[in-house]
Image (cartoon, rainbow, N blue to C red; front, side):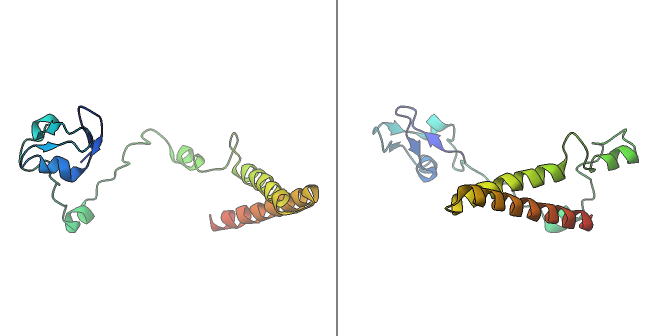
Length: 140
C-alpha cells in the first residue's frame, strides 16, 4: 500500500492508521482533523489485498520466452555483431583509461609526493585493467 497523507495538513500517515480507519474514524496525529476511510477510498474491511502466490510448478513449467520476437528480422551475423567490441564504444580503451585516471587520483591522494604518486598509481591502475580485460576475453 502506498503511503497516504492527511488531506488537511499533508502529514504522512502510517499504514496501520489508515487500515484502522475501516473500524472507525480517527484523528490525524498532526492536525487532529477527524479522518475517515472514505477520505482515502478504502471504505471496505480489506483495504489492501495481496494476490495469491503462483505455484512453483506452474511457473517452472511455463516455457514462454519473454524476449521472443524482440530481434525479429535480424540475421545470425547481425545478432552476433551486437556483442562485439567495436567503435563507437571500445570497451578495452574505456576500461584502461578510466583505471588510469582512477589510479592516478588514488595515488596522488595517498602519497606525500603527489606527482610521483599519480604517475605510479595511474600506471598500476592501467596495468591491472589491461590484464583484467585480457582475462575477461579469455573467458569468452
